[in-house]
Length: 267
Image (tube, rainbow, N blue to C red; front, side):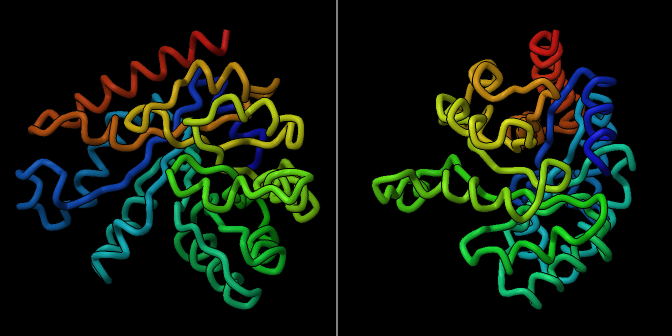
């Protein structure tokens, strides 16, 4: 999916919501455990209930990898089921030397058919560029994350600028706003203004709204650009909102609350 197709979806649905499919067998409604593929059945019902309210789905691959071969099968079935006009994100946080990154890119882009994959920048350009060589596919580079441990490295300052800003500056040389996005956590909304000075036109994938306490309005205040430029992710707050057989309907209600706020912010 290219940038203009993504923007079209945002305008059409009046939404820039991304739903994280972090599907955990220990957290899904118990009645689904009798299904042949409980993970896929859960995802299928969530997708059916929310596909008109969001523009992206983001399976966290760890939840599928942890189940071995069956987990990968559930992931493939999930990706195949997602409507083709919805942006898909493999939240895999890959990143390795060039030939390995090339195989990761082939796995997620050619085999699984994801539109994008999250990538860790620590090993530099040769670990990222192989992903960028795929047409109409996206790298979503970790920049400023919302976890507590982000302070360990991301704010390290050599007297000139913090490390996360160096990541933004350097990576702009590898890709462009048509194939490169950044992960920026919602729990530090005031940092978006500084980030936008460096990457004014790139899309930002923003976790941390909802269960982690991030404010949608604050993120939009500092981070939205003329093309919206944001994908706001909510995972647990939507998919686990309901615990019974009506879980998908409850998930829809939670997604609708966010979508309605987004619609207002887009006016």
